[in-house]
Each structure stands twice: as structure tokens, then as C-alpha cells.
Image (cartoon, rainbow, N blue to C red):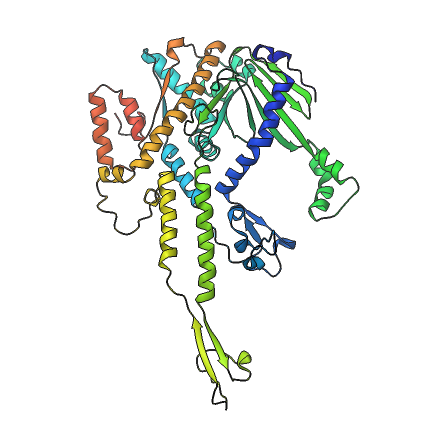
Length: 503
């Protein structure tokens, strides 16, 4: 492949550096990131002919988290003499504690809408900036897009936002036409499996360029090659199978630098554009989930939970096997002919002339306190590591005290609330940086004029915990008495100034 990287000479990007970033991502980062997502998502994978594995109980699917189970549970036998208990697949129990904890943390962070407020000293400028920023974020997906970005960040440890601007459309928009402005700008999250950052050699916090790698189907190839694809999926062979598969997929590489953008498909340059509005700005915003010193990527919520998730799944599978073996009464019969063919149930009669015949019952589930305690301790460890206890998800275990007080509830969830506040710093910084890039482009296009001091914004977060309506009203009255504009207070309560009976 030959890239035309002379337009990136200002940041020192050459083919060797680009290849190092992309190949390093494929070799080191991509397998780890895919494993993190598989543990979070835990998808079902159909197995066997027609989606059913013959001779296996509940065997039409496998789950991603089974990779962390021992061979004695899954039936994999790498060495036949290693473990005689691994002769067959046992009952596999997967309880995905990772997914609901991650989703709970995302709900606490972006479960309610946020507001991006201007810090400009001029009231008219503040109102204008807040309206256009709100419209841009809403056009980009609003709170749903932020939840998606937070999910990617929680799983992978970081997420990158790219600000895409249709400069031709933006330059043609009338000043103050918020709808036209919002249509010309999009803020998109880029997950870590697609993005390859090219970090500055002297500062890991700065980017020189950014690459987005996507493998997709070739245009127009799907309909023509569908019979060939179906043949390969059914296990059929054709002489040109590998060549046909290669023609079906196209590697798309998008390079983004300060003021320049290139798109390559299978190494061929198909698109190149230069920015008129932001000639020196890299429209990429990096967001760490939880900050990690001296590292570009942040801390993943999934990574720390994987060993405990494997241990929990192992113990649950062991317990299921034990319960199966012990929950049914079994009988040892001596001296009774045809006992194996006789029915066992209420009213059944066994008869023999053998005076030494006997029937001995055994089995039945017996308590295992150490097993129960071990599983409980694993769950508690996951609570401490994630700071997301079941109580935050509405699951009450035993007596938890008097939680009618909001203060008592906050004390109970202090760990999750503290972690949420920490994440508000990193995600809030990403939102403000992306908003500043938007405001710089709007000013350069002349549709929303702002000075350098007018482009400062801050994020107003909502309380993640439920609150009483009377407490919200009392707090709103206090804000009005302090001089907070009534429109802003009404908006925080979910009302608009134009609503009936609102004055």
C-alpha cells in the first residue's frame, strides 16, 4: 500500500509511523478489546449442524464467557490424561454480573438529560450559544448518543468523539438558522476497536492525527455474490472461495489530521478534503472512562471484573452439577430381578423370593455452607471493585436499614456516587471540548459569532438519585431568589416558559 501523506508532514506522519500505529493496534490492542466486549455482551453463538449440537444438553449455543471456565465444565480436553473429569460437557451456568453493573454505572452517569451552559458574560451570547449547542447535540443523537459513548468508554476504558462538519452546507446556512446549522454538524463516538490514535511523541495527552479503520463489504458485491457466500456458510467449497471472499471485503482507512482528511480503500486514495473553517484543529476529542496516569487509554470497568466473573461462573456451574447429581433419589437394589425395568413411583410394587434382597436409597441435595459462602464473597468482591452494589439496581438483600431518608440512601451508595462524580470530570471535559470545536467552526463560518472568551461552556448534571417533587420545587425557588434566570430553573424542572399556566 502507498499512502500520500505529504499533507500530514506538519505533524511528522509518515508511512512507517502510520503502519506502526495500525499494526500495533491489530496485534496488541484489538484482541484485548474484543475480549472485553465479549465479556460485557456475552453473546450466544449457535453451534452444531442446524444450530443444534447432537447429544448435548442445552447444546444449540455457546456463550462468550465460557472461555473462562475450566475444562472439567466445558468438556474441552487438551490432554486426555490431564483430568478424568473432563470426559464430557457438564451443566454450564453463566450469570453475567458484568453487564448489569456496567449498564447501572452508565445509567447513573447519563440516565437523565444534561445541559451544556455557556460561561459567557453577555446574556444574549449565552442564550444564543446554549441554543445552538443544544441543537447540535440533539441532532447528533442527544442523550442516547451519550449513553452509547459511555457504554463504549466503560467497556474499553476510553471513547473518542469526532466532530464532523459539512463545511459547504454550514457556509450556506443563514446566520441564526439553528436547524440548518444543526444539520451541518455531527458529533460521533468512535469505539476503540475502530480508532487508531497517533499520539504525539512528546506528550501522550496530545494527538498528531487519528486513523479510523473499518472493514466492510465492497459496494455492489453483496447481491451478486450472495450465492457464493451462502455456499461457504453451508460448508461448500469452490475453487475461487478465498479470492471471492477477499473481493467481498474492503478495508476502509480514514485519516484525520489538523485541517485535513483522507479516505483510503484497500490502499487507494478515494477522497481528500481540507478544512477552510478549522485549518489547524484536529476535530477529535479523547474521553477516558477513568483517568489513568501516563496512558492514552483509561481504565475499563470490565477488565477488573473478568477474573471474578470467571470464578463466579465456575462455582455456579459446579453447584449446578452437584445439585443435579444429588437432588434425585437413587436406589441400589440387590437380589431383585428386573429392577432396572420396573417403574419407580407412587404405588409401584416390587416382589422377590430372595430373603437377602434389599433396596437402599441414596442421593438427595445436601447443604454446602462453604460453597454458598464462597459465592457470596465473590459477589461482594465484585460489589467493591465496581462500586455498583445490587441495591443501586433495586435489589434488596435482607434488612438494609431505614432508606426512607435521601441522606441514608446516599451514604449507602457513596461508592457509586463518588465514582460517578469522578467520571463526570472526564466525560464532562470531553463534552466541553467538542462544544468548543463546534463554536470555533460556527464563528469561522460567520453563522454564530463568538469571541474566544465566549466559547467556554460547562455541563450541568442531574442528580442520579430519585428525588421528591416538593424538594425540587423548594430548591428551584431558592435558585430564583439567588438570581438564577427563571427560564433555566424551569428547564431543570422539565418545563418551558411557553407551557400553559407557567409564568
